[in-house]
Every structure is written in structure tokens, then in C-alpha cells.
Length: 338
Ligand SMILES: [Zn+2]
Image (cartoon, rainbow, N blue to C red; front, side):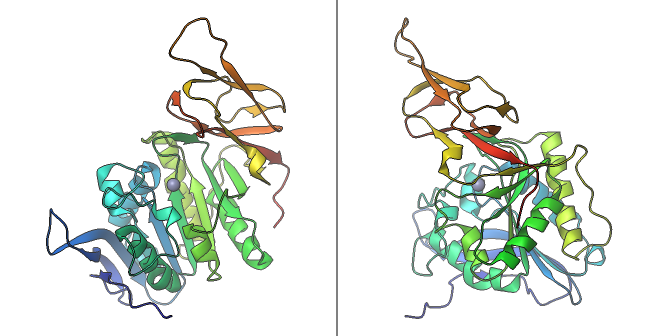
């Protein structure tokens, strides 16, 4: 069955040269607004013929490194700075971002678990559908800026995925390396089926994902990495003039070959990480203790590294519940093979 057209309309014209700021408008009707609309800010910067880059942040609403950098870029970028077209959506899940949450307050939707989306689904599924069927087809390359949000802290990295299309995997990996974060990664997803990533890659488009910090805030260092990375991405794919700026230290390559990279808590309590983010760990090394907050004299539960590698992500809040990811340990490799 063919899907009906997306109910979302854009107030910008993607075919017009120059700088436009507008909205992607999705009609809604609820207690607060009978004839209302979800308004997703969008900027289009176009200068003649050339490739199209789609730059997205706020896929999760509490991941502020990408949101901040894209709001800045959208305000500063001028048409003569680029060749082709840059489409900037700083807050893909605008209701979530405006509420300071990972998921939408309108329907509880996690946008990055809602792809390819549905024009007749929930608000979040309707947003996903618009990206899948309207914006991604316009793009040659997509950069989706994530970070750990409120519950994770992650070493800044750009990543591509293991793909069946090896030529596409190579182009994406080269883009991830060119982003110039301290770390570059070939990423294993716990479940890729409903990700934006998969919606883009299945259309044969280059997709680079990033994780750029977390904790529900930004730092000057991480924002600088994000801003430089976006510029590097645009240079690498031919939308901007200039040379890619590499990271100050030699880039560290990591691989996440399987699910053993993820350490998840089987207990609830108070978390003590015994290794710092970015630190190298050996298989079997103590990495965390979880304490019972309800009594003294109890022995904390210990968690150990399941593999050699680098601590690339950690739970950010000290309170931990069963099932929470405590740590992610990625394998450090000499080079990334695409
Ligand atoms: Zn995210």
C-alpha cells in the first residue's frame, strides 16, 4: 500500500538560492491548541549547483552539542560560503528539544527509534516519515549530531557503520575520519532497524553519526570539536573551500564489533566508575562498583571489563538501575578497514 503524502509542509523553498529560515510544520490538535502545529526550525543555505548536505541535531532533544553548533551555524552561514546546498535542522525532534528531554512530551516518542516513520502514526512517527521521504531524498550526505544526553557521557567521536554496500561504507568512513574528532569509530548498533541512520543508508546516501559529549550540557572544548567537525564535513564533501583541520592529537580509531562492548547493570543502586572516560582498560579489569543505598555493611557489586579497549561511554548520573548501560568499551585498532 502506498503511503499518503506527509502532513508536514515546509515554509522554505529548498530549490531557491540564498539563505532562508523557516519551519517544517506538522498540524496537531490537542488541549493546548485546537488548530495548532508542531514547528520544527529549518534553515536552507543554497548557492547554485553542487552537493546537498543535510545537517541534523536534536534527534534526541537533550543532546546539546549538536543543537548549539547548528543553531550557531544556521545564523552565520552565508550562501557565498558554500557550493551547493546545506539544509540545517538543529532540533529534529523539536517538541523534545524545547522540553529539554530525549523523547517527545507529545507522545513519548524516541525519534531515533521511529524510522522509517508513518504519515498516519504518532507525531514522532510523522516527523520520522517526513525526513525519510522528503528531506533525505534531497541529500547526498547526512551528518546527524548526537551526544550522550542527560544519562550518558561519551568521548567525542564520529562514526560510520558496518554496511553491506562496501563502497558506501568506505565513503561514510572517510567522512567520519575527516570530521576530525579525537576518535573515529566503526560502530555496532544494538538494534539498527528503526534508526535514522538506517533510513538514510538504505537510500544509498552517506551517513555520518557523531557522539560529542553528554551529561545534558556543553563544554567549550566539545563545542569546538563539534563546530570544527561540521566545517570539516562540509569541506570533505565539497560544499566548502579549504583544507580539513585534523585533531590536535593523532586520531584514535576504535571498532565496536559486537554487543560485548556494552556493560549493562544487573543491579540498582549507586554507581562508582573506577576508570575515567577515554581511559584504556584490560579485559577483566574492575571498571565499576554498584552500592546498595539502603544499608551499610553490604559488599558492592563489581563490574569488570569484558574486553580490552577504551572506555568510550559511561553512564552520567550516579544513580543506576537494572538494565542501564554503565560503560561501553570499544576496541582500539591501528586502522579502520572499510
Ligand atoms: Zn542521540
